[in-house]
Image 1: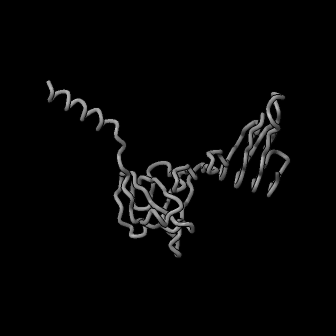
Image 2: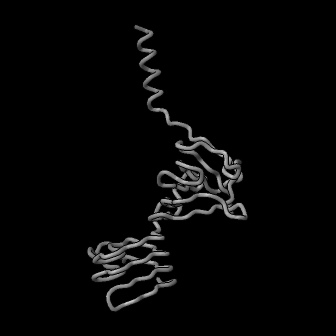
Image 3: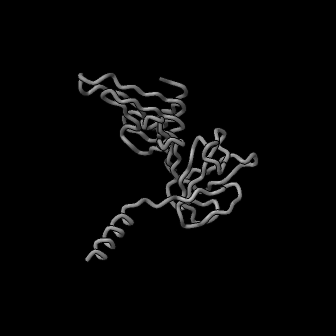
Length: 186
């Protein structure tokens, strides 16, 4: 009986323990395929294997060399999400810095966890981006095509909320009869 209890406890603790994600030397090009790995990056987004010199880390699973098989997620070294994106290629440029080819939506985050919409594409919609009832929306590198009402708008629905805010860094909006380019607007 004592043996069965010990076995049960061992299996229970093993089931709930988190799997350690392998830290790789990405610059060497030697990393496993089909397994989630962790890559440390310094302040210039150059890969490093030393956690104490890293400001960011990336979790990625490769299906082929430099070809991710799923969403790629970057974090601040302290654990807060920095960005998430889909990519056709994750590698290094000629200077040894991070180089990616986006293949879908990218979302960037402030360190406090608030989202910063970026590199987004909206097509054939009523309203592109909306900020309402005290929310803050930041838009950068976004394309909005064939919108029916507004490319971007803010509104206050409930008067007990603060006024909503929207910051547009760089965006293009096109609809029948109109072309609008936004840059550094708030």
